[in-house]
Image (cartoon, rainbow, N blue to C red; front, side):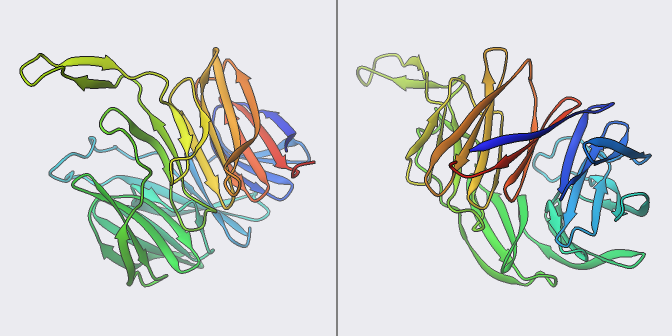
Length: 324
């Protein structure tokens, strides 16, 4: 059962959240907010759009929005990298350090307090943060990375090439290749259907996929020389496991997915708002369903048994209290 434990109305829209015990570090449109004892205790004047939590809870990295963002990457690779300014916040969350500007397109949402894996273009970069120093520890060249996170063995990297999806496992912190292979996907009716969101990392109890068929058509002909007839594909939106078992059927394509360990949160538009499904990945079933009226866009992160959900300037915190 998922129980809401707190709700905060903040002074500006929320970009990201890190839960830290009884505190919450919140990346706002107007700085970084620190929530303590159920209220906004202070705001730091630092522009961040994403937060990276440390394992020991002693620090958080803050990333700015892209600086002079490059055009969307198409082949051949983009000429100008995606640069962001990086900040470090430390307990008791009363000040921050400017670590400089780096080229970062995608990144792990956590770090060990010292080493932080990222990618930009066709390179994976391991940044090292020691004292006031912040620099490159190692680099690894790959092709079209699109997801990166930390696992027990090191770094889990997902890449794309010629329509196929692959994974690479790298050592940490020196980014030596340990393993590579093809990513498994559940079967879909491609190209009529496509994956809107996926979570595949080995840290999960099992992979989870959001399948969408919005705006797709199935082509049929009665005979070889007959004209092609296009039939719209309807009611195919669903959340499934690797073997294709349906966890939930959706009235619209999923708008978001967050997953960690044996839990996942999926949300989709419905009846003038957003509906959220809290999923048990071990049992592949929906533990709780709730809606937020009037919401059109949301963000979410899972922190053990706690779940942070934000819509606009409102943050809601939930806790998984089991099946009681």
